[in-house]
Each structure stands twice: as structure tokens, then as C-alpha cells.
Length: 263
Length: 311
Image 1 (cartoon, rainbow over the protein chains, first blue to last red):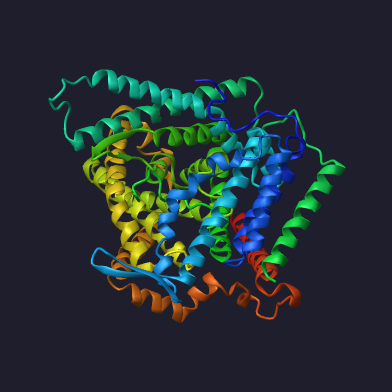
Image 2: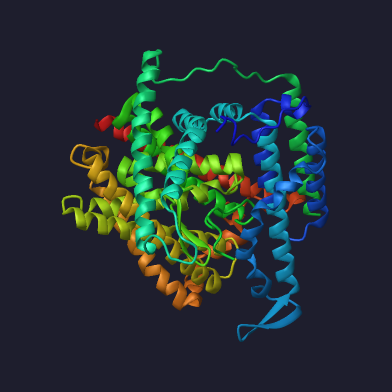
């Protein structure tokens, strides 16, 4: 597996790619917080927030519908919110029978449900764009600048670096299991659920030992190269004037969005 | 429908800002202790170890086994990580995994990440380690049995806390979300338990030194038994109550003001603060959050000073 198999970064020459990662993290988080703060049914503000996402897409040169394609990822979770359709009192819109109980969709319930979906959909798009225009190591570095403890960011950086190595290891284990799990069509092969679970558990144990021993080797290799408990970076980030300007501009827009949402 | 692989990763937009902030505060305080404890225990060696272990948990979540009807059992890993690495390191490892899933794959939101870390990383580790630690001097069979139960309960606890947060945010109705989440995770938890037990038994056979005396796993303070026990007790007591009598729980929450705080009156934390042209919620919510974080930060610094003075 190639080292960038999990990468979500899309190389392009654009203003968003060039922005300091701190700015991008900050604006993304503020945008998502702003979505959470918008009241239910603030349609105009929702539309403007969506325009914000669309314009960001355009500026990133990734294409106007770039984030749209992957944005349905949070949709399955919407099922968990479906109960608000029936639980909030209001004008009944539609009544139907489901599993011998009568359910009534109310207008307030529908309003809240749609608002939750829109908030989630907008937030996910922004998060997708963030990792599309920021290299992951830069993102981690930005988190460090934003006072996330170095130990956590370094663990995440290591996780990212060894993700594909351990995934390769898992695929090897799975391939080994499959090649030993031949079966004849129409005849049951292998054991029951318990037996299968035990095999899967052994694979997890095996993977744990391989990871554990690998981390030892990595540590020794690092010490041999002068590691003393601290990682250094070669490309230090520097806030330029356009970074400050972009931050102020984006926050200003989000602020206006909040005001419009409350009018 | 709810059988998607990880229905515990809450996306952004599903939790109210107040619930998100409260979860962040709990998570940050816990992580603060986790970081200072692992710093003492493992030193500079910790970073490559925990980094690769996080990659291990991430990769191990891909291993699954067919159960029935197209569903499969797989691992969340919180309990296993805490048992093999010790509770604090386990929490950090799980935090890194959840953070990466949210940052890179949008599997779980960014602003609600505090809640996701709490549900899937901290609570699972506390229950998994606490219950396992309580039998650490017993026979291997007892240890494995308790580890399996702890793994199952940790998944149930994650589901319960997720359900409670969704309900407090006004996103789901209690009498549906609790039985739905708990029912589905009762099954998912069985997969978790089976894999955890088999993996632990495998490690005990091949590398007993990693789990025996003097290992990181055995070093955790005995207080974890109480912490894990209390959370487990909470889960065990609340779940049937919430499923059987959701109105009862709702009434308790309303009486105690939880619902208002979660759903629509965050500014009541700082009642005098209003901004005429903005209405009350937006800025004062943020301010309330900042005040909360400052309070916690002060407490953390004081506690930290206290710990240092003692040692």
C-alpha cells in the first residue's frame, strides 16, 4: 500500500491551499460552531452558510461540487434524529400507522429535523474541504500551534504515518485467513460464530504483538538518529498579512450570518 | 438501519453547543491527567509506542467476522487498549484514533469530538480497565471472563452516553433512542467481547510478560476499580430505568434543569449576560463556554500544583 493511500489532500495551486493551516482549522471550527448556534428554521442563514461553502469550494479550485460528493457520509446518522419528527408538539401534518402505533409528523418536528440535517450537512462539507486543501502533517502542526498538547499531536502524527503500515499488516492477516478458508459450494465450512470470533480475536492479538514489536524497533531507530523526546519540523509556519486578513474576513462573514439568522 | 459499523460516531450538527462544550470540558480534564500520568510513567519512549498502538487500534477495527444475515462483529477497542496499555495510555491512544477518524475521514464531527472521545475512548477505557483490574490477581479464566464482560459493558456505556447526549440536545426522543441504541449495541458488544477475550488470551499465551506483574497493564492505580465500578453501576442502573420508564428519567432531568441547559437556555449559566441586538444565545453561549473552560483550567492548575507539591 502506498503511503498516501489514506490521504484526503488534493494538490492544487489555490489561495485556500496557500493559507496558513491554523487559519483553516480556526475558520472551519468557527463555521461549525456557528451552524450549531443557528436557530431552527433560519433558512436564509442556512442558504448563506451553504453559499459560504460553495464559494470556498470555488476558491479552492477543486470544483464547485467537490464537497457535495462526499457530504452524504453523515446521512445514516440522521436516522437517530428521526424521532423528533413525531415528538415535538405542533400542527399535525401527516399521520400514519407504523408497527401498530400511530405516528403523527408535526410541523415543528419537521422543522427541527430538517434543521438538524442541514447543520450536519454544512458542517461535514467544511470538514471535508479542510482536509482536501491542507496536508495532514500541516494540519497536525496547526493543532500544535493552537495549543493542543504536543504529546497528543505527536501520537496522531505517528498514527497517520503508520496507518498504512498497520493496514498492510491487517490485509496480510485477512488474506492469510481467506486463503485458509476454502470451502466447497453448498457445504458449510469452518466453525460457528464463536469459532469465527476466536479467529478474529487471534488476528487482533497477532496484530497487537506485531505492532508492539514494531514500535520497539521504531523507537530504537529514532534514538539511533538522535531522538530525545521531541520532534522537530522543517517547515515552520508563519502567519502572513493575508492570513490575518482572511481570518478576519471569514469570521466577519460568519458573524453576519449569525445576525441574519436571528433577525 | 442502525447496524452501520460505527453508529457511535456523532457527526456535527446533532448535539447542541452546550452539550458539546460540557463533553469537551470533561474530556479535556481527563486528558490533562492522562497526559501528565503517561509522561511520568513512560517517558520519551511513550510517543512511538502509543502512536503505533493507535495505528494498531485503527487497523484492528478493520478485522471483522461474519455473524449472520450480512452483519459482522468487529472491534471498537477501548477496553482492549486500556487493558493492554494501562488506562491512561489507553485513553490517549483512543483519543488519537477518534481524532484522526474525525479529521481525516469525517467519521464523527469536529465540534462534537469531545463527546465522541468521551463516549468511545474515556468511558470505555475506564470501564474496561476498572473491571479488569478488580480481578487482576485472580486466575486466567476469571480475568478473561471479566474482560469480556467489561468489553461488552463498555460498548453499552458508550451507547448509553451517546443516547443521553442526543436526548439532552433535543435531537432524539428518549423512549426511542435508548432502547434502539442499547438494543443494537447489546449485539455489537457481544462481538467486541468475543474479540477482546480471544485477543487477550492470545497475548497471554505468547507474551505473558505484557500483561503480568510489572507490566504497564498491572501498574494502574487501584482507584480505577472504583472509577470503573461507579461508571458501570451508573450504566447498569440507568439503562433499565431509562428503557422501562423514560418519562421518569425525563422528569428527573427536567426537575434538575438538565434539559433546559442542554436544549435552549445555555445563557442561564450567566443569567445577566445579554446582547440586545443579537438576542441572547450566540455570544453568551460562547462566553459561558469560555467561563467554564477558564474555571476548569484554574482547577486543573491548582490540582497540578497540589500533585507536584506532594511528589
